[in-house]
Each structure stands twice: as structure tokens, then as C-alpha cells.
Length: 249
Ligand code: URA
Image 1 (spheres, rainbow, N blue to C red):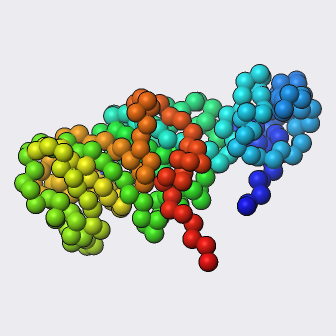
Image 2 (image 1 turned 180 degrees about the vertical axis):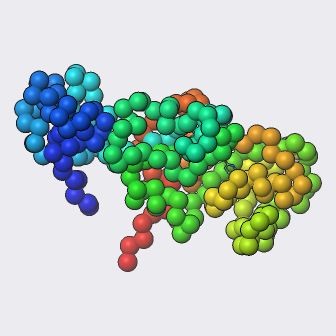
Image 3 (image 1 turned 120 degrees about the horizontal axis):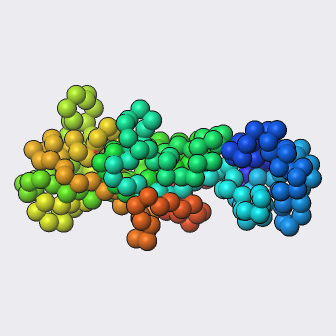
């Protein structure tokens, strides 16, 4: 088991966006930081950074934000972007303002288009991010697709073949699984994350996607009670549904 990291209290709080080192030192000296019910008096105390810290530490009487190692699932609404380079509201704006000042910063695990809704993961843990998006992890993503025109009937076979070449690319797509739900809707499960992949796959078979929603990553489904714009921490059980088991020699 890996050992939990330790950080100086002032460094921890400053990195979590509670203020500059000096400002958080003042918070501590004013007696506004407690751990397990005891007031912390020294800003240079070393704190063991465990996941349960937000249940044990209070800042001005309020529970500490999730400590570094944060991982969330967000129900991304339509019309919100995942990239600072695109115009319009951004997913980070759905999180508490203080979280935007965190170091390490929170980023999205892959991206969804502005006009795609559904399950989006976010984390400040680079290692976790890499484990999920690495092509070697081969993690599936399921999309509910609504189409402009009726399915022709040969799409599932074409997508499953592993030979479909998207316009402007020189490598065929990996096999993908399509399940028709009606004439104009389907589930499509892919393991890659190429630019606008689902929309371009349906364009390649002469159709047009009119609505796109991701409802699953690995075996983790978007919870029905998580409304668009809402987020919640990923539990160990959620992570176990996403990540393949670690192989031991
Ligand atoms: N494929 C797309 O076309 N868009 C997304 O947002 C995700 C997958």
C-alpha cells in the first residue's frame, strides 16, 4: 500500500486555494483551523494527507474541501465546454470558485464536445488521469446517440470491423459496438477518444448526430439522480468500476 503524503499545513491550505501562504498562516494563528476537534496552532505542522481529511479538518467551522487526490464525476450539461480555448461557459465554472485556485489543478479526464452531455470525470491526480485515458487501458465509453436519419442496418457491422477510416486520418478506428435502440437512436460503445469521434463515425455512414449523451465509462454509469451540472466525488467502488484490475506478477 502506498504511504499517504504529508504536507505542511500552510502549504496544504494554500495549494487548496484557501489563500496565500501568509493568509492561511493568519487563519491558523486566528484559531480557525481544527483537526479532530483540536485547534491547530502551528502553520508548519505536517499533515498526513488522507482522503478522510475533509471529514476531520474544519476551516472557519466548515469541512475542508476534498484534499489533493480529488476525483469527481460530473453530469456535464449541454452548452458547456471542457476547454479554455473554446468560447462559452466552462465545466470548471460548475465547481466551487476556490477549486479553480488549486495546485495541482483539476482537469477533465478526456473531453466532451460543447453539445454533448453526460458523464465526465475530473481529477487533480495526473497518475489517475493517465491510467484512465491511456490507450493501453482500453476503457470503454458508451454514448446514447440520436440521429437525423433512420439507421441503414449495416452500421453495427461496419463499426465492429475495425477498418473504418475517418476523414483526414491514416489509421482505422478500433472496433466499436453499436446497439440500435430505434430507427433513429442507438448506443455506441468505443474505446478510443478521437476528435468528435462519434459524430464523425455516423457521418462516415451517411448520417448525422442530432444529440449525444455519454452514460457510461467502463462499468460506471452516470447515476440517475445526478442532475445536469451536479458533481460528486468518485468513491473507491466507482473507480473499481472504471479501471481494469491491476495485474500482479
Ligand atoms: N464523440 C463525439 O463526437 N463527441 C463527444 O463529445 C464525444 C465523443
